[in-house]
Length: 140
Image 1 (cartoon, one colour):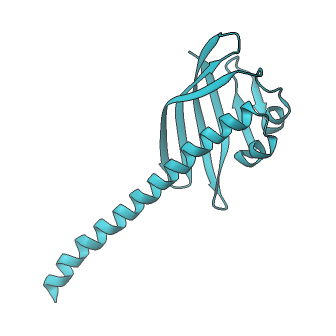
Image 2 (cartoon, rainbow, N blue to C red; image 1 turned 120 degrees about the horizontal axis):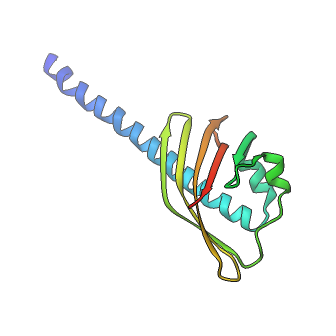
Image 3 (cartoon, rainbow, N blue to C red; image 1 turned 180 degrees about the vertical axis):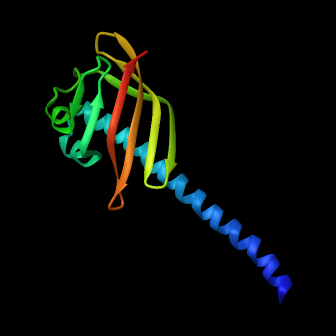
């Protein structure tokens, strides 16, 4: 019986660790999708999606150093029609009910002008839902 305990304990520990890793992977996938949803919502002026993604406490620091709130973002004009945004080099780190996303947003205007913005977004899980609480962007 003692031998069984010695064999079972490492197996149970391995299962617990793999379940935790799976949960973190799942959260990472969800957050990556939320980042993509955010870009699409911004491009198409989908304020309903933006309201769900951004926490009421949301604060953003723009590339010019200006601070914006959730209401500022919701009332901002959309990007020019025909422009595109593509996320690249996205890294997600999940720690329990908090996550940090860092990456690049490649913006292309309809006239061909392009810009690359580095970003960092802080997420928090409240009531089972991930929300963005802080963002920071800089022009590269």
